[in-house]
Image 1 (tube, rainbow, N blue to C red):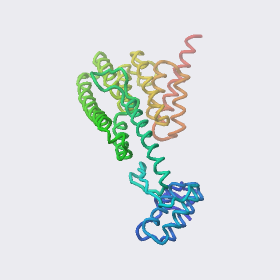
Image 2: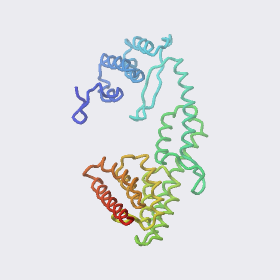
Image 3: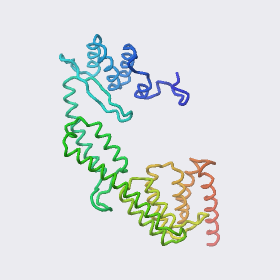
Image 4: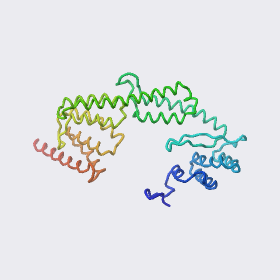
Length: 333
């Protein structure tokens, strides 16, 4: 009663859609097994999955076709149509497959209207996610989603709504292609500018060069602000200019550390348990002699990594910080 040698879970604890994808349904699967699976899925309130399984029986077994149609209509609370059922195509984004389910003619027309509205709504969402893309950056409305993800979502949109009247309108399809082209161009610009940023530092000990690079990196980030890898490079550039002391206490340029913090904070909103960035935040606050905030980040690192990874470093930095605080307190006496 266990799924496999890697994840020791009972079958019943799996979400129904994963059981369905694991179950070996194919051309050789007996109709009785498919019907049993469909009935079980209906019992699990997974109506569309159940319909999908039973549709296979409906399409290949003429003798069972009317019984399957009647069963589906009963479960869906539809009136059984005199002229038979119709096939409705569904794009399964998770498994990247086209699926088919049975619906009544009335339900078919209803879904057609819903699909047109869904296509229009999603189209607007994608436009907002892309932001402005004409003219030189920084642009007024920046992307609200990482550019490669916008690109992915547009490609999925074109598959899912490919047969819709909305996407058959060349005005809309041309707009999507224009956005895809703009993303390709912007990603190329980012790479070119990253190379230029690297060239700005010929001496890693030159603070003026480090600051110039960090400022230049800020401009690059405006093109794709939701790219957390790119944002981390901006944060690291400011951190390098700030130059925290090796032992953690103090830094050469507090302004650089203060500019790095918002970037690390944004990254941690997306990756809250990334100990590398948690450690970086701790080091920033320790460099600014804010022991309270630094300790909070270090303790989180230790909680996650223990005696491995960044854990030992966090412990050592806490010791240095505590010693520095104690020395400072003694001097004040």
